[in-house]
Length: 108
Image 1: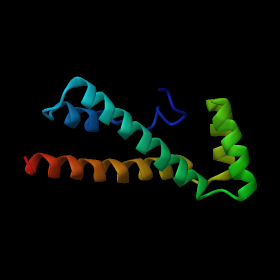
Image 2: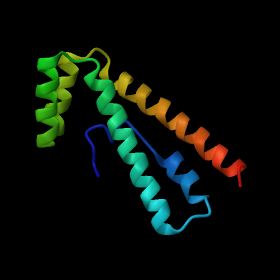
Image 3: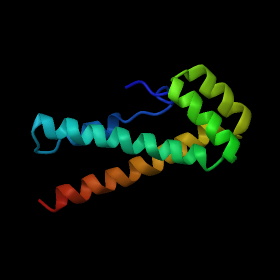
């Protein structure tokens, strides 16, 4: 699914590691879907933590309409260095997922 932040976040390193696991195609697809969902909610949480209650409602309305340009216009107006904050939240989660994958490989 194309998300409003897709142009600044990559998850290829995670999907590459998932492909190396000894799992069925369906299991890998399911894990990739979980990674995507986790990343999405991590980014949304990072953004919401920067907004006032009123701005949270407005952001969620823009998000619901899936108008990426309106979302970016809004976020750039309301959140200082929003892209950096999104990238940081995504990188922290990806680091955590990489660690989990490494532990998973070691335990086999």
